[in-house]
Length: 140
Image 1: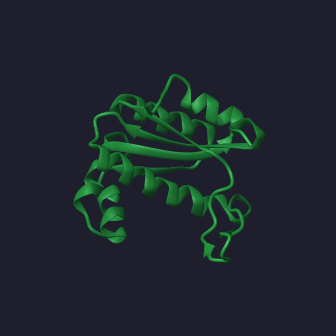
Image 2: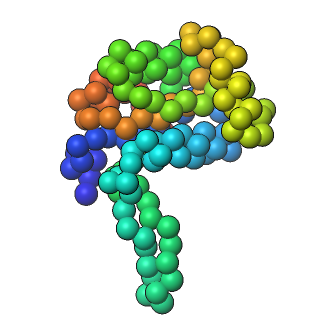
């Protein structure tokens, strides 16, 4: 199934000036937020190989990955807020923390417009997702 065959679109936007390990780390953390918010219907069945070994289920729909500069990430956040679309965020400060509690404290300490966003994840109806992601380039 392609992206257009689902009622929603899942996407991650990462900052274009991050190191490769940071892009991967941000993407993984944002996907955990999207998966948690998506609910059971967005998760498939366990995978089973030919020897009956079980593997964890995955998200049932494709995830689009985009890259953008800092200003565009702020635009994405603002567009999502205007449309009432919940998002997952990752800020630069979170690279220097070591646990979830410290991550949340790092975000809490900064006013919305001053967050140094390095990644945003969202899962929304196509129309909303397309409007929020308009103008972004897919990650190479």
